[in-house]
Length: 383
Image (tube, rainbow, N blue to C red; front, side, top):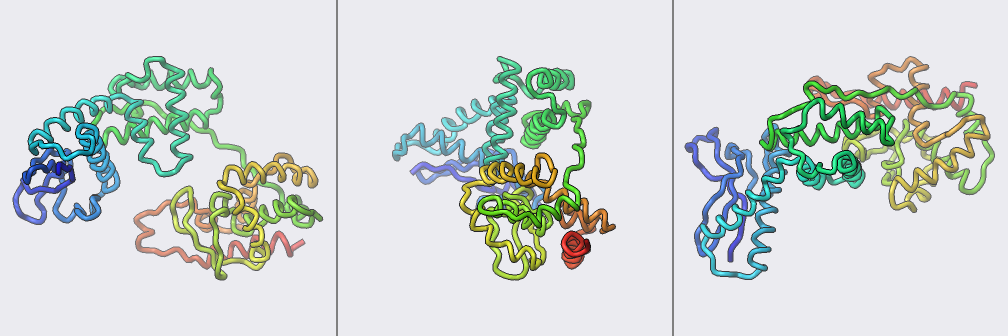
């Protein structure tokens, strides 16, 4: 039966350091022919069982590129044969599939078709929605955007698009920056895939504005702790405080959190980073609210409910527009007031990115636990 797979074949010597070509392998009637993917790897950089690139600085990108080509080729094969075992030689199979595949590849030189394909590689629903919003904006801006080529986009085009966004319902600098970063990410991926060499962002700087520091005062937070609430408002207040006692854990992580010991360990939804800290007694006393949050299918619906009730709770203590995120800001502000080092605060909030130094130095997690303990003690026991 005709089939298409990925195979690393030798075309550059037999040394372990020799580069080999990753190719689409077209097999039929006991023969196999190859079509190069444009990816070259050493023998130990291809896992043939999992069909992934390994031990390579661009493993993820190259795996995505190879997988895209394989899936596209297999889809074409299925459409051409209808799933039946038709008599066809390996050479004929390659010719038929590659002719259509190369034709479809031409579309990838256009921004929007490539952006949709790039968007489909994202696993998170929210990420896909953000890119989809940028696609919609591009179509609103230019009726001919579907045939807008990477090579035709320059810094002037980016400035004009930014100006149009400002004039058509997107006055926020940071909101416009999201669309521009999406386009920049797509350009970076297209360059990696060899689709284009054009990079207009060398001469176009994406502007951002630093948002005003939020958070609430220590006196307001103490009043919230002491409020005599019942029912849903009590659960929402306790959920807010649980987030605070866990150094501002966000709702997306809280909704998936399971706690079995005196330490909390989870992988952040936003960054994928493993996160660990001690479960303080004040937080342990509020774990009952996890039964409430787990009734919600997603963090978005939970946040809507929380913020609606927090707005009412905030009005009782003189705080306007109290939201779930204020727990995070407030913890950070109080920690700074207590002269806790910025590095420790950043580690507690999960803001730091791994550096070369981090490979050799393990951050002392006890510092985070001590910082959290100091913040909680200051709020609850130092009046």
